[in-house]
Length: 440
Ligand SMILES: Cc1cc2nc3c(=O)[nH]c(=O)nc-3n(C[C@H](O)[C@H](O)[C@H](O)COP(=O)(O)O)c2cc1C
Ligand code: SF4
Image 1: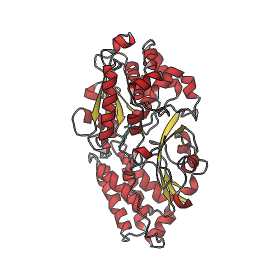
Image 2 (image 1 turned 60 degrees about the vertical axis):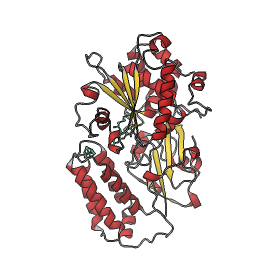
Image 3 (image 1 turned 180 degrees about the vertical axis):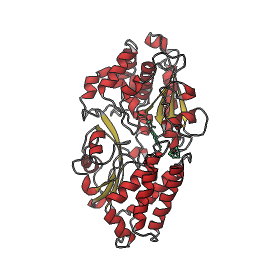
Image 4 (image 1 turned 90 degrees about the vertical axis):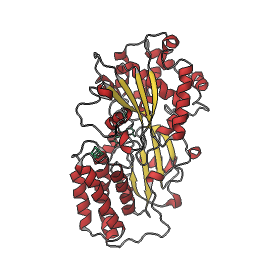
């Protein structure tokens, strides 16, 4: 299977190797076409955002005003702080020039002269690697004012790497813009949307790293080629980060619509000890969990996952075997969202704390079955009542896990389930895979 985002080419991260394989020719081609044409091709390709919401990229770009006195900006979102999500760092390490080329084409399409690549603050290694690639691209004239000479065009743009502020909430697009502006990473109330009122009050587009990295091949090989890969309504490949109870955790680039069971059993090598699967969260910790007996036949694309009762999110597949203590897992997830709540809205600030408190009570064996209903009530009070989607991110795993594993939770609360002593909770946030072991 052809890989679009992480090709199996040795030393592809080096500028000279990238150039040998057609690097920066998509930009040259794009600059000979009108910006409307580029937006139209990306729209027709069916590319959808890989940052969580799977929104049409071309459509998002078309929201940018054509005529404005203000400067326009592009923010490339590499904050990647969702537990279970670790795919963008593969791009920083193995394919930084395709991300840079995608960034300059995207800037051209939306009329931005400046782009910020916002990288998770803890990603020290990947910030350095990305900066090195960017310095090389500047020196060779593929970014900055030398672009005019290199590509023979009037257009040029600058790219800055912005180190993240060490908070999950800074990945939310409006918090990210505040963070770049040097302010506290508080999400903004929408509307106004970033295309009207973004960075410093100017029109801004925010896209995920993987989304932008898909752009050069779409321009080079044509939108029809891209649209023909995987599921027609959510085409292309997706980087699936598989973690938890699998033999071969890692990042796998596969066509959208690949079966979830195929990814877990074939690519990720199945479950250690051939145990059964108890639970899978298919798109990063904020997405609704699925029961092990619900995953058969489920395809990994936005529409199929919605039909199955979950969502594609960031494609981070978290697998839990039959001996997992789901109450502890959920308590750990709730702790994360409580800790990361920025505190602006009461339902999120208070509600995430209540969820954690109730779940810790259950973990300690001091809860009751009525606590399960209380969890769902609190989650429902958060969902839909907050400024940003961290509210849903905190509410969904709790609500859907308790609903879908009601028998399990009731038995656990009434101490009818005894867990193997050796069974440890797998804290998904800390499922850090040594990069040399990551297969793609
Ligand atoms: C709490 C929170 C954290 C987020 N973190 C990220 C992130 O780390 N990376 C990302 O691309 N999108 C993240 N998002 C989604 C962004 O707000 C935005 O939708 C996305 O960057 C758009 O890019 P796309 O259209 O290419 O998917 C987050 C959203 C929320 C609510
Ligand atoms: S939902 Fe939570 S994280 Fe988002 S703005 Fe409100 S308090 Fe902050």
